[in-house]
Length: 264
Image (tube, rainbow, N blue to C red):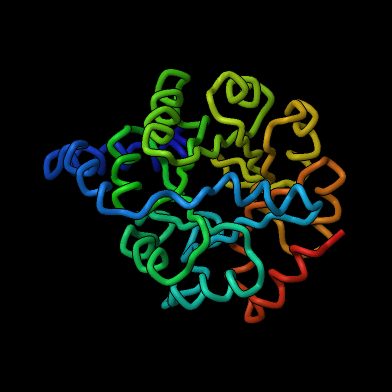
């Protein structure tokens, strides 16, 4: 039986094929030269986490397979500005359309409206998507080990680094953490959401965090709603957090981001 992730990857294969019929990777690399230099996604997280504050990657997400429509008609620039005023370290922007309602148009709009480093969050299965991300001003990409083999993951990371972008390596179990440690990126996320069944459990970070060696940059992703969740996850050593759905549902985003950043 195919999983939710299998279905996403299947249509992503079709999307990439369509991109390649229209543009080459070199076309995107040429476009990328007109972008300003990457803004240091990982460095920004570290500058905050080194002060023992919570470095928040706040996300623009219109919908999801698990939650359905989250905020129809959301203004991405307005939401991003609220995150920035609240003290977010970085932004994550969903660019997948069918499952998450995102687009590269959303990404470009936000890129022009805020100064924070930005992660293109999508299901990367080909290096052309990395070049496409930089052509739209991305400072970092997401590499999801649940939908890549080791060779592809390494190619994606190296393609990002060649463009001076960071790569957040996403894991969900012990085997994926081990795989992540062999890749040339120190930024490792533990996704508390199982993308195969779309179930979220903060205990995932608690169970796996000890596998990430000191000196690596651990990001706890998904399922974080309030300051109590931050306090709980800080006990794992986490000082970097990716938060999306819960923030999108709030009316007081700026105030709440400020509270999450300060939570101890």
